[in-house]
Length: 355
Image 1: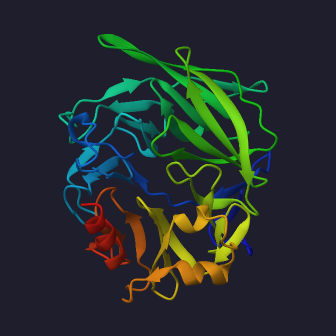
Image 2 (image 1 turned 180 degrees about the vertical axis):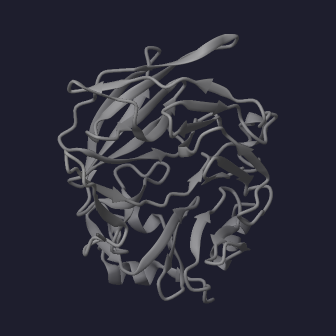
Image 3 (image 1 turned 180 degrees about the horizontal axis):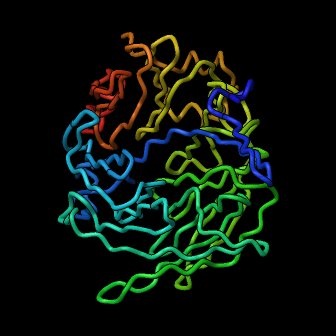
């Protein structure tokens, strides 16, 4: 039965002795790499690769949108694994970790930076024990720092650390640490770009920051805010302090707990702008300085005055994919599957001023 409240949720019942009922929540995520620079250069003028990973059953499709534009279902590199893929995450250094349906991990060194996409390092599955319940099912994985990852267990929605051991001539293996206590079940993990930290969103709307620091790579958790509802996407601008931006299932753009725009279909962050699309086919740019200004009253009307509309109508259903740093373009995914690049006036002017 499809849920009356959420079109992406279906309830399935099985006619067995246990008569279990399962709630399946379908989520769509784009997985761009962190702001990696070519050849690991510290030069901020280097190209931001923004490599996109797309899952197609047993295939992983990789395309560096900062260098080329290849519309799906095509890709710059296609790798086929022996079992279906469940989740993909990126390390801060640009390595790819692929969680497979059998519970194993496949790790690939930096693609498009001298990495060989035909060579994978397999990490066998391990059992995860939470509150006496042993399972091999993990629904999401996020690479925090070095060889430390975070994962969400399927049945209990508990947060557990995963450590990678071995490599460099030895066999890879996983070690799962003790459950990390949270005040509510974990809804999803989201990478905090540019830092060895991630956002942990709980089902009650609370947002935690998980950070890995020190030589012992100890994970610390702290609360940084609470959203009015759980969000499909959360973002924190670089150097944004306690500013949390998100979109909920109803298409409301939330900044901390305040709804500032409605009918929002997608959003992303650029150097100095929050960019979002609307159901009315608009592409809107809001300077991040608007949120940091203490003199502005943060409301939908005041943000409308600060926002800049690109003055062109998008194709209905267009979604923002990414906006590479130190560039003046945005990449859009259109409903028929093709990708388009736009050079909006707001980003062109900002780029020219930085020259």
